[in-house]
Amino acid sequence: MSKKRQRTRPAAATSKSFEFNPNYSLVKRDLARIGILAGTFLAILVGLSFFQDQLLALFVK
Image (cartoon, rainbow, N blue to C red):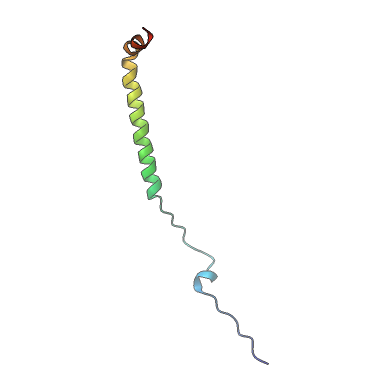
């Protein structure tokens, strides 16, 4: 009878711990874009609030 040989596994498959290193560069860029858009829209709303009475008079006539 032949001897049973133990199978060898690659080192990556046998290691129980691994390094979790996510890349958040795309998330940071998206959050920066959202922040810029939110700030721009807020500035537009504040600017329009100064001319609210004049704009309302134009549309109500």
